[in-house]
Structures are given as C-alpha cells and as structure tokens.
Image (cartoon, rainbow, N blue to C red; front, side):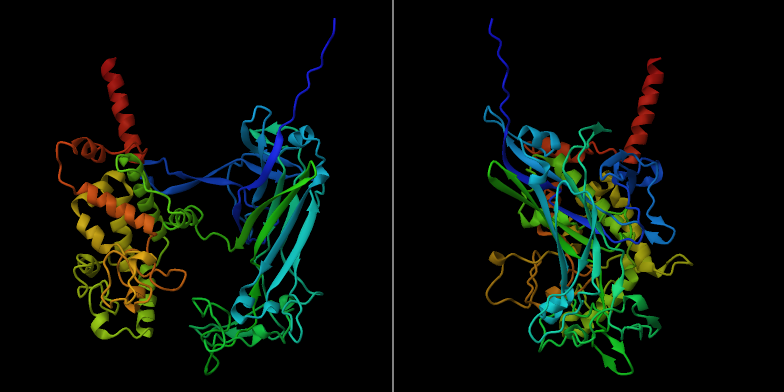
Length: 567
C-alpha cells in the first residue's frame, strides 16, 4: 500500500499595507504611554447623551520586546505633573491569494512568514520624522530638522529619533549635529506565536512614541514679554538653548514682501510683541512636534513589497472625552465626495445628523463664546470691511449677535439681557443652554421640522466648489455657498459655528457634505405629507432606534410594568 504525504500549497503574498495607515500621537513627559480607551455614550439618565471614555484592551511592551495585552480598570492621563504620551502601534497587514484563487486581507504574522518561507530578517522598516515649520516660514530648508532610521523586523531595541538640520552652501543650519532635537522613539515589537485576550501577539507591529513636549531656542531665548499682557516669562529653559543663533529663523518677521507666510501668520514666538515698539522678529523657538512616515519592506520570492504609514505628533488632548464636530474623518468624507445616505434611508441620515449635533454640543461645552466673539469681531475690524457691508445682517461689527442683528439673533439678546446673577459669560451660557436640548434625537427632529427655515438661515454655508463660482464674483454673498475671493464671505459673524477660525483664519463652516445633508434633511421634514410620502413621513416621525439615556430609561420602565401586568 502506498502512502502519500499531503502537500499544502502556501498562499501568495500580493501586497502589504499598514493598519492604521495614519495615526496621531500626542506629546507627553511621562515614561508611561497612555492606555487605550474608546468613546461611549454616557449610560446614566443624567448623561444627556454626553460622551464618556471607557478603557479598552491595551498593549504593554515587555523587556524582550513582546507585548502583553490587558484591560486597564482606570485611565490615567498624568503621572504626577507629566502627561502620558499617546504612542500608536502600527500593524503590518497582507493581501494573500490562496491556491483556489480567492484573496484575503489578514494581519501579517510570524506564522504566515513561515508558511511563505520568508525569514523575519527579510522584513525591514525605515522611519523618517521631521519638523519643517520654521523652514516653511523662512523658505530656507536648513531651518527644518529631520531624522531617518532603518531597522530590521528582528531588532527589538528602542531607538531615539534624533533630528538635525541639513547643511547648504552659505547657509546656517538651525539644529547642529552635536546637539540634536529628540523627536521621540520607535520600537519594533517581538512577534510571539500566541493569542491572548483576543489579541494575536504574532502580528508584525511597530510603535512610535512621540517626544516630551519641550521647546528649544538659541542662547538669546532667555526671557521675553507676553504679546497681550506684557508679562515677562522664560522663553526656553537654559538646557534647551542649543540652536544656532546665526540661523535665518532668528531673522524671520513675517514680512509679506519677503516671505510666503502660512495663515494665521502670527503663530510663532516673537510676533505681536511690544518691546517697547511693536516687533515681529522671531525669537528662534521651535518645539519637538513632528510629522513622519514608516515604510515597510518585505522581500519574498525575489520581489520587494512596500507599505507606508504616516504619523503626526501634537500636544495632549485638552478634552479627550469630547468629540469635535469637524473631524479628520469628516474632512476625508468630504474630500472623497462620500455619497449621502439614500433618501429612503432616513434612519441612517437621522443617526448621522443626531451624532453631529451631539458633537456640536460637546465642542461648544469647551468654548468661551464670549472671548471668541470679541476676538473674531476685532479681526473683522482689522480687515477694514466697509461699514455699509458690516452693518448688513448677519453683522460683522459690534452689533453681531445683539438686538441689532435680527433676524439672526432673534431671541438671543432677550436671553442675555436677563442672565443669572453670577453668570460672567452670558453668550457661552445661552449657546450651551440652546444646544443642550438638541442632543436628544426627538427634540432635534421636532426643532428641524418646526424651525427648518431658521436652521437654513443660521447655518453658515461652506466655500463653493469651482463649478459653482463665477468668473467675476458679486459682492453680494450667495446664501448657499461662499466665495473665498469675497471679503465678506471670509468675515466672522454669528452664523453657526459662530466666531470660529478655519485653517486659513477665515470663518469656519461645516463641510459641504455635512451642510448638504442637513439642508436635505430639513427639506424632507418640511415637505407636505401626501399619500405616497406617508410611509417615509412615518419613518422620519418615529424616533430611530438610538439608545439614548431617556429612551433606555423609558424602555426599562415599560418592560417592567408589562412584566408585572402579565404576572
């Protein structure tokens, strides 16, 4: 009798990619990274649909470079006075083709590499990180600083990202080679053939840990006055005064005749300072934030596959349990022209709009609207908008959001005229009170059905796309889109979101997708009810199955009483 040994044909590796492809790290002086958490809706009745954080499975790096998964009982954001950094993991994934021709996207593990007869050393990473903010302002590449590290997938040491400035003929580099600026660390994770708490420990991972959140400057960056108060403070700690005092960054003054300035143009140390006359000359200060890329190389069967991920590091999150109403995901959905839900999918539309208004309230709860209003109107005045335009509603002068700004302000002045005795921020108080009720789905739908025209009036339209714009723009703004060439369309007023800056310092709006979705939803809510539309109207009128705290409480009471009646 002849015996046969089954031969298993390994899959074919078609491509590799990172998950996530992009991540945001946050600076922190603690040596312990922040543990993982997720956003959840407050389950308590008093939560009023506010977001809370809930601990999630986290990974702790062990001495041998492997990771241990665990579920924290509580999230610590600080160790004493030092913030814990947010240090993202990047997983390497693979697109496999099986012998039967089917394809599958899976995490790339050490087990898969063995099936492919690929050694771990055939996988390598190149990490590049840079801070080019000073170079962007001056136009001098030697004012930027960067670093590059290459490491094998079998090397589990922790490497520092030490950045320096490039040299150029006749130019003075900002960061000298003998005194680099650390931009954080990277570490390849040791894959282990095991699964714990649902986490596959054999996945190929790399972790980026950002820097501490320090500032650096030249020897002259000792003390200086604050722009608005004049208070004298230490600019840079003595140990961090290591930058080249001859660099062009110390001569930068945001002069538009010489520099192509980013907006806002005054966001650098040394601008708007009176010493004793007004000065705009940079103090030569930089920080240890950075942008970077991780490139993976996998050599298999004589072919080299590549994957790339991006990371960004920024300051600690001011309010990690509050979601922004305008996020990176919203921008990407708008850029990619992600289609809106179909007209017959009212439940999905309602969920998206309800979630947006919850995020609006969460953002509003962090804003000093009174201070924002004063700053925005001051900026309007500096842009020299003609009085005959500034006084038209919605107003862009001191009459904004007052009894002079009707019909936009409407009842706002009446509410502010009778503030609570101890209320020091009347505009902030009124805005929070108005938006708090709109966090409940039922109240939001009722408001949009009853006051749909007011929603259309109060919502600031986004900038128009090119096909909407005319060759010769009119000075009279279009109610459904703005034109960046018109000064009035750039100005701040009380339309929603009020007095908030966009990335170019002009008035912020929702994305086109968000704006169009709200407008279409309001239009459908106010459409006359016909026989054909009664089904759709019933769907809109019926609250969608969103588990708000009020709904959960009512459903528990109804279920309990129903059970009692049956008994």
